[in-house]
Length: 368
Image (cartoon, rainbow, N blue to C red; front, side, top):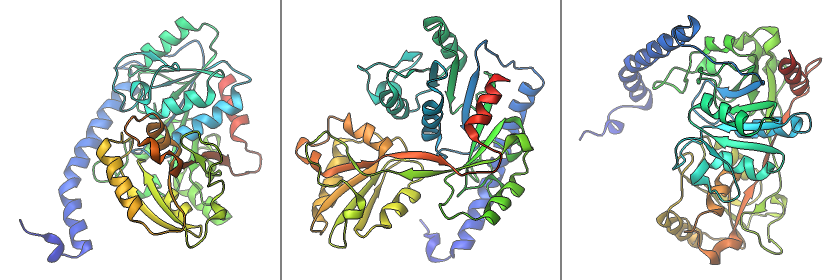
């Protein structure tokens, strides 16, 4: 087999790949256009419900921050509404409608729904179902007092017509610089943003300038009622994945140049998380797996072989909050290594904008 990397430069390889993928991107786009045409002309019907449904989705493949934004909405509205969260439960090992309970694992309902359920158990009802219409009907039947449903990752699921459609756009991967699958990461063409009610630009840098905000608004070209709203990810102090007394690592600011972090991630876009860890004084080594990866016995063998080979006065494994859910409930994780591993909790914060508040505007849209 010819190794093209030895005879072509990076730009030439990129040009060849683009030429190969472009026809497939056109075919994908044609399929998306036909599907949306059928829904827009009501050849395929969308269903509305008596109670308000809020969809939180995106137009790109993964990694825009849906889960922390769903959590932000839950925290803001759980005292005003009886909230049910419905997700398809991506990569779960089950099918059909399943109501979350304490006896279920991430494999039963998916890692993100599992995280949300255990974080807000008692404040919300949570279920998974790949058929969103069936899932909403079942939730309404089982819990007649529910008066708000949050749909996770449902912008493309047009069989349900939400009262409010929220679309998240990643600041680091703006749709106006992207292409349709498989050439790029767009699941929908950018013009589909006109079909949503609110657009949130996520993962904004902490030092974003007014010029950057104006540029993003200009390129997105939204109606004034749609926003955009701007949010960022805010990291908290490390937490031990397994309950232990007197954890050694309570703040990343306590790290110094003699300490070492092994960063283990299984999320769609790990670069911001890795960049955050590298802002501290410790040395950082990274192992990355696919998004929603379920760790095997051999994975942990590899992780700890690398961990033991690292130098450092103090050594820690640090992972993401979503990964910690799959590790905590994994029987293959060595019990003797539990004191080494920590996760970094994340929260969403919204940038202040004159005469615009995300939750206030969301409640108005729900009640409209």
